[in-house]
Length: 171
Image 1: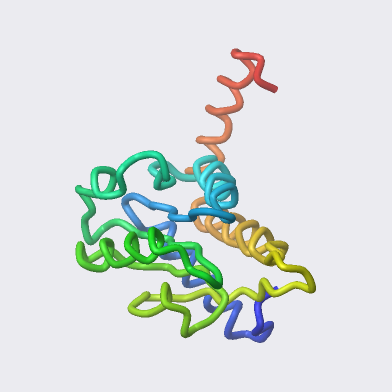
Image 2: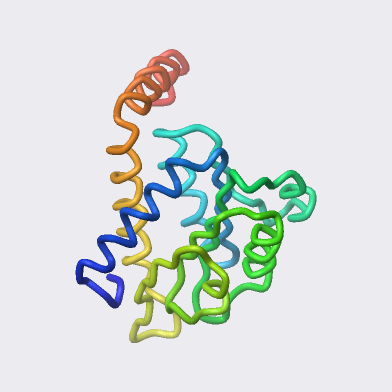
């Protein structure tokens, strides 16, 4: 879990959920080992609010983010060895006046510099690789908090999605 299990983390999560809920568009940036987590987080958030995007590694970042506005939110997800692509996305968002919600391993991580809010997550493990169990939990908690804040809107959205999923036989 995150290094701080006190009320401060709870307040950070609530504030992060409010940032996600109030943004016009949410852009998730996760490259290399956290690419799959960024994609999963987008699927979760897209079930309960529109306009959540993952910045694709295969498309030029500048082209994808050229129309950022101060109403948008950038969520860079980066851990030790910090992808330069993720740092660039955060900087590009900051220059556009976007709010930045950094999810990283330290309040002083490079991606946290200049962020409006940072969620610190402990990812160290006994192996060469980071353990992303805490990241998955934080994504789940944030999705639940955002869902709670937009209960009426997301229930209707989920009903509509379920109808189409039934029609296409995807589930």
